[in-house]
View 1 (cartoon, each protein chain N blue to C red):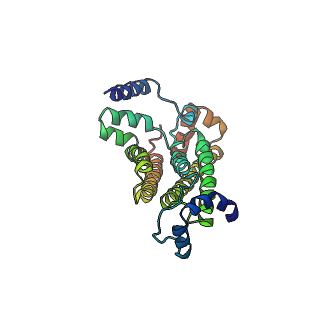
View 2 (view 1 turned 60 degrees about the horizontal axis):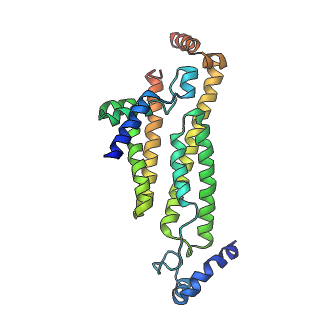
View 3 (view 1 turned 120 degrees about the vertical axis):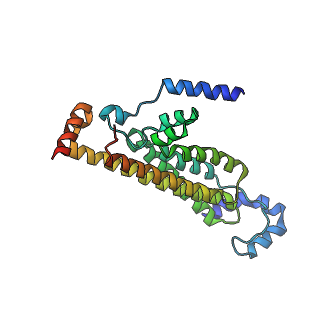
Length: 108
Length: 146
C-alpha cells in the first residue's frame, strides 16, 4: 500500500513536471522518444489505447524494465535470449513509429 | 593474458583438486561441476547499459551513443575474458554479457542514425529553421506546396 501511494505520488509529480525534450523545444518537431512520458502517464491511468496511440513502444519497454531485474535475480535459462529479442522488437517499433510519424506529418 | 587470470582461480581449484582435473579433460561447454566458476565482472552493467542506450535517444542521441560505446567496450572485454578461460566463468553471465553487447550495438546504431537524421535536417532546413519553430513551419509548408 505505501508503495502504491509513492507510485501515485510520483505519477502526479511527473504529470506536473514533464521533462521537455531539447529537440522539441528548439524546433517544435518530435524526436523518436517524444510521447514516452505522456504514454507512461496514460498507462498509469489505465488508458491503454491512448498510451499505445501516444507511444507504441512504451508497454514493451515497461515489460522489459520489469523483466530485466527479475532475470538478473533468478537467472532464467533463456532470459538473455528473450531480452535480446524484446530489445530488437522495441527498437524496430520505435523506428517504424518515427517513420510513420514523418510520413503522416504528425511530428508536432 | 590467460596466465594473469590463473592465479586468481588457482586457490579455488586446489581446494577441489578432483573436479578441476576432470574439467580440464572435458571439452568446453560440457556439463562438469560448477566448482570455482564465478560470473563475469561486467555482465550486469553491460546488460543495463545496453538497454539504457536506446531509452536515451532524446538529447540529440548523444547519451545513447556514450552508453552504447561504454557497453560495447565492457561487453567485448567480458567476452575476451570468457574465451581466455571458459571454465572459470558461468555460462549465464556469458549469455548476459553477449545479450548486453547486442543491445549496445542496436542502441549505438539507433543513436547514430538519429544523429545522422539531425545532421540531414540541418543541411536541408538550415540552422535558422531549427532554432525557430515558426520559421520551420513556413519552410515545411513551402516544401509541401512545391
